[in-house]
Length: 138
Image 1 (spheres, helix red, strand yellow):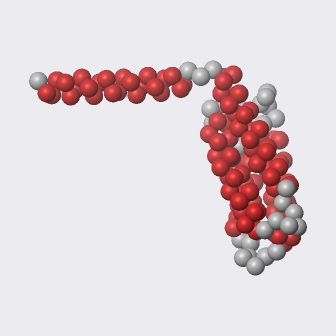
Image 2 (spheres, helix red, strand yellow):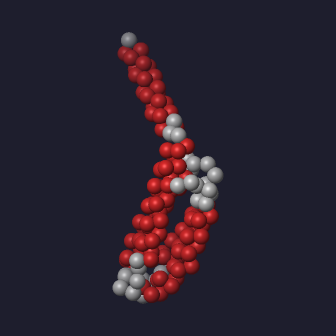
Image 3 (spheres, helix red, strand yellow):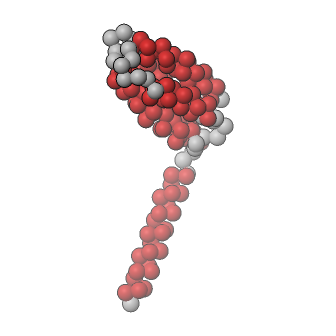
């Protein structure tokens, strides 16, 4: 008798799990695109944070901006994977280059040196962003 209830409970859990997955999968293309557009707005703001760095900034400020950008980029990657015809490989590659540059900065580097080191990487992210999402209608 206990085995019967255990089997029924297992079936119920499986059905509820499948229903939860199906509900998420039922999001319309418009809803998925709207989420991606929202995440892209957040990414643009995170990218703009690099522009706020200046002579009074510290390397810790730079690393903090870089970390925040990485977090937002993860959200974009997640929502972009749900929307067809979006190619984020270029953004990932450009960010990887930027991240390696930031990680490779000497601990005694000045902020001017840090900003000069990342300038081309930040520009590459912007170019990759434009290329990746040119076809998304936000």
